[in-house]
Image 1 (cartoon, rainbow, N blue to C red):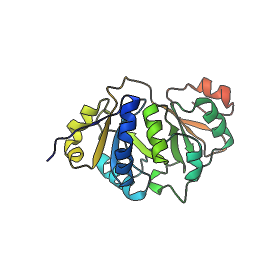
Image 2: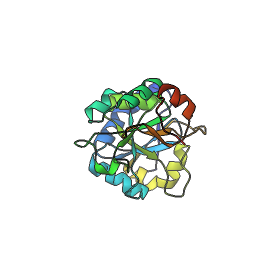
Image 3: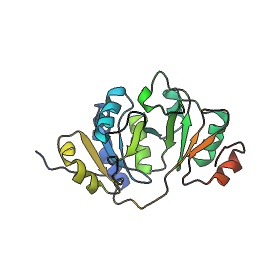
Length: 221
């Protein structure tokens, strides 16, 4: 079996050099491990078969969906997701950044397995410049979930992924982008925008006071 290796994904030059093979890997249904602004994540294209492979790899409970990463708001329109008035105000102030919005729509393009209990699809415009460049090259969102099994801490280095999933990497099931060791940071704030009033369903990096300054009818504990 070939030795498991990662692909440098640190400098702008390394990011550009990685794009062609990474886009091809995703479009062929492969699983990608990549650095985010918080921890390393796993992702795929949003078609049902690729999502099912990621669910099996993660041993993810069926009722716990993945979020989507985007690089601009037109990407939402292409997959049929709708920015409500409150979501638009929040996105204008806090995207790209550590805010995840749960949005309505996407029935024709997004698999039901990605739909949460609120009935919407969770989306974040990532501020990670390398990922933004990859998403622009792909011209589609990718799924995002932390690179770990249930009960394990999320990976903060590419080496941890190689240690845990070396066989899958060597077989080409997983492609690993190495963005170095990631510094600890707060998780994104998650806001449900599918109801009458936006509602914080997971507190995170952006405090409720800052959110309410933009969207006064926000509901938060």
